[in-house]
Image (cartoon, rainbow, N blue to C red; front, side):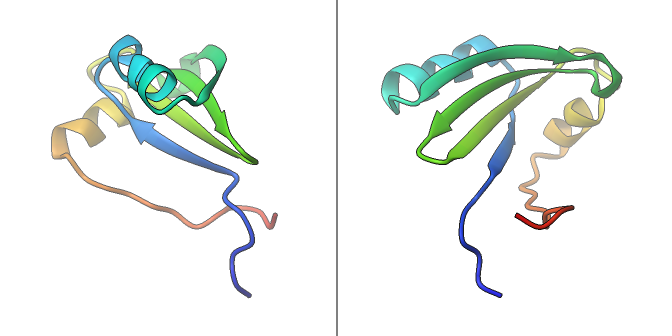
Length: 84
């Protein structure tokens, strides 16, 4: 079945404030707020564009999965875990 929409895209960033400014001020995306997800060791900034969301993920500790991911400088796209 072809994709009909994107629910959200997560982007690992080193600095949430700097990256948020780009998405908000340069790209003009609507900023929806931030949240710390302690169990994932990240701070998340939420942006929306149309029906889709961008989530910027900043590691809060050097041993977090996102910090390790940034060390590798990889691009990762995963399949949805639930149907939309």
